[in-house]
Image (cartoon, rainbow, N blue to C red; front, side, top):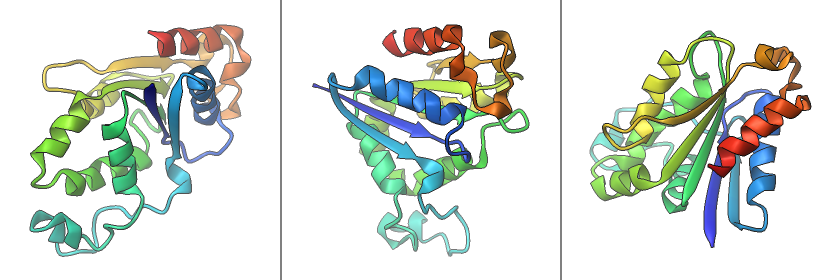
Length: 184
């Protein structure tokens, strides 16, 4: 039975990323266990306002009990994980950077956790009308060294849509692009 993890990093409920995450959930429903995280709906504290306790002992992190570790553990326990992100000013959103920063505490002094995390197949879906470079660079931290991230960039204007309206998946062609990418 396949374990699938999905994380939406959009701060906008009901937008394109939520629709894409829903499409992924529909695809995997009945094929195994699906775990979904709406990152913006969780109370995850960004790194900072601490004395770097995690560098000595990760359990000493003052934010150890927030949902960050549950997300990392769900990814590491999955067979495939999907990251769904909007493009904000040609970069991934702040939620994704919070996830990355806080992940260093999860892996601190636990190389076996990092190896397990990196071995999980990951697919990235980005709603973006601009470049790929900044996203690809950020995603490389989540795949084994030397591997290129498996990424689908959905440009709303290519489907006759405007990203901010959140109606990208009202295009049958966009739905097909997502479904094809999910199934690969």
